[in-house]
Amino acid sequence: MRRRQLTAMLLAACALWGCGPKEPPARPGAMRARPRPTTGPAATTRPTTREAPGRVVAAGMLQVGQRFIAIEDAMAMGRFDFDRLNGNLPPDQFRAEARSTVERVIALLVRATLALGEAERHMTDKQKEMIEAKVEYAKSRMITEAGGSVDQLKHKLATRGIELKQVLENERRKLTIDFYHQTKFMLSIVITRKMMWAYYTANRDTYVTGRKVRLRVIAVPATALWPMGVNDPTDEQKAAARAESLKIVRQAAKDLAAGQDFKTVARRVGKSIRARYGDQWDAYDFRGKSRIDLMADKGGLWPHEGSPAGFRDKVLAGAAAELEQGAVSKVEQTDRCCYLIQADHVIPARNVSFGDAQESILAILRRREYLRRENAYLLDKYRQFERLRTAEDRRRQVRFAQLVLDRVVADYCGKERPP
Image 1 (tube, rainbow, N blue to C red):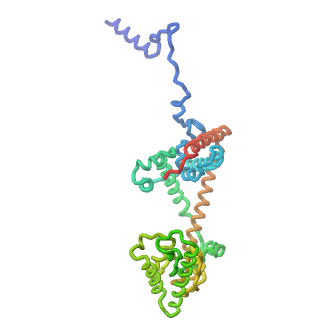
Image 2 (image 1 turned 90 degrees about the horizontal axis):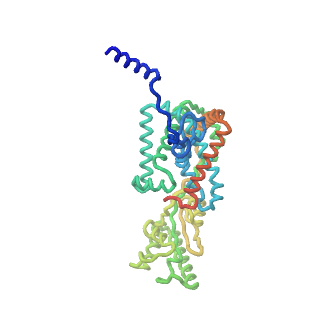
Image 3 (image 1 turned 180 degrees about the horizontal axis):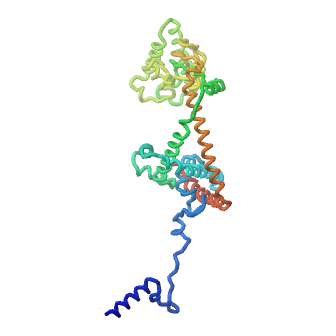
């Protein structure tokens, strides 16, 4: 018994120190297990943090610091820029025009990725909740614009090879960086009264309110006086309609000169023309019909109110620029219509005082200084990143940009924009 115990103990010690029995050698001709491949889709799609900054570690992935950028990230971030490209161009020309847009999107994405780490480290739980709420709001807005359902939104994005999660992640990254930068830079910005005065004096033309006008119009289009049921009148019929239009407007001018109210005269003119058509007024459609309704229903009050340049009709624009409040123009005639115009209400142009402009100037200068500081910060981050990269790293980023460009050409060239 004692001998058996000693033998068991000796065998256990040998096994512990590696001097136990070895595996038998493989027989000649036997198949050996092959090592797992180090290349191919399965290996190249798993990134590793051991790679150098800025290195392409997978097909369609670029490492920036300890983070990774995928082709889908670039597609999501640049989707509005890519939509503005002319997809009707031939592929080679489209590729040439899209190249600069792709390079700019990747550069912005790299800078945002470099800034994201610091921003996330400084986020509190409350701030993270606020950001997630804004992401959800952005998602609901996109769903509404796409037609009201998540499936419609996903289909719309899929036409450009983009997934919804990539779009939301891009929105989350943007909000996180913006939130942190607002806290980091905006609170320390100081704008003095002297700075605001300097901006005001340098941009005086900006602080002038333009002339604003509301018009009442008697407008009798010749088409309203064509013979009923005639869509292609003769030259004699057209001339007769123009002459009658001028006669109606001249009579309106006489009524105004006799002291009648412009609104009353306009209503009477509009209703008298509509009365010609009787019950068939709604069935007729001709150029200038809405002007008859404006006179009959609203006393000629024109729907547009604002600067003279906002009136698309040149006759109305000229009257809006010249007439004083309450004044009536002379009778104006064109090939299509006769006019009588009153400036119902006029707000003259005036200079905005420095006191009234201070609030808007303060916002402008604070925003300008914020952008200056943010750009300087991001540029410094990018320069530090560039110092760590080798020539090979830069070549790999160029190859990554080529992959993105290939994707843009495939998804956008020769295809219509999604609705």
